[in-house]
Length: 138
Ligand SMILES: [Zn+2]
Image (cartoon, rainbow, N blue to C red; front, side, top):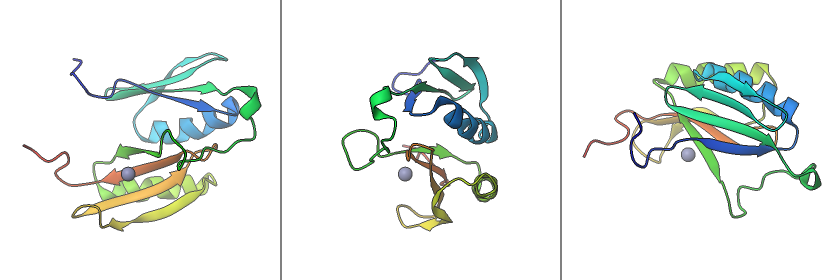
């Protein structure tokens, strides 16, 4: 059922569709998504909790890296059920040569915030985080 205000889908632009397909297959399959559509214009993964797509960027921006300090997306965070999943993804990404920004650790943002930060092939910052009792019940 759709719920007002929840994120419906996230659409990313990538400079090399094949390279990013390999990366997102690894990441999203781990996170419980399955590839549901694959065309030269769009690759789409779905899970019960969301839809993520990648599409080719403008050829002019082929060698550009994503700059999270320019207007636009800073980073995208996925949820984990527990810390072990965060550690497991870290291991998987390391095996695939993914660039890690910060390995799994507790961060001070909130009590027991445990997260891993890494980059997609275009330098989009991604996060897997486990936060007990998130979102806080009101
Ligand atoms: Zn974050």
